Length: 366
View (cartoon, rainbow, N blue to C red):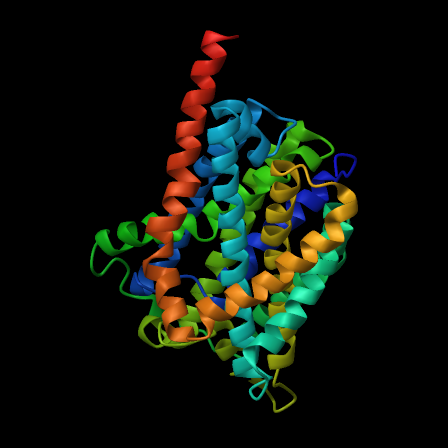
């Protein structure tokens, strides 16, 4: 694994695909009503700071992944425990995202197909990608990214050509003050999707030019935030805040309204294709981060990769079914429980503690 390298462009594309992933398909939170687009901009700004926290932590051991650095910073016993926590975290997020996209595909185009079958097809692709390694994932992302951008631009273009947005639906701005906006920014807006960039601490050592990781990441956060803001504004302008908050797949519901002269219509398949692409890469990145962590924590040789990814892939299907077969409960847990009790400790609190310990260790033993 140590000889694998990815370019700065590939790293940037992977960041964009992960950030857009669930957020652009499911829609960002609408809890702040017509001001919810402000939530994205503020969360993006805080996300830049949070990404800087991740790169600052990695600067202490720039050639190591998060799992390896944790052992260097806190010692072999506590460090191994922290590594296992993050491995479990990445695997859990992969399962949650797999549950999101499997349910959405089942609800849209494969209504009679069991959830485990839909999830199984996703996992088959993800395990193959993980077995082939991060270079293959990066090159595949580079290949599909232009299509994601093309389809996304096409969606927005046709929505506006058809005259669907009514920007009066964005008013009144801050009708309930700043409180709903700020309480949505933290923890929900910051941790999803921007805080999820902590997964790239498992990929920093694979970046060919590691000196550019901060600039690339910041650019990725800002550009993904702008794209999410434009998408959110469009959805709000078409449906209004109250109606948008009730939609299961806001982007799909928005595109389905397009009907230009009875010629350009029924663009749902393009949205679903985009949804599958984004879902695949987000699941693959979190799953592969967990696989890398297992290799490094338990010194599993590369020759055993096929057995590792196969067994973990089977486990991923089981966990996904257990946590997401009840979709309503799955979504509620993802919005109300995970951000505060899972994301905040592992994206913010523990990295800050690791930075503090690393700082003290370098002061004592420069």
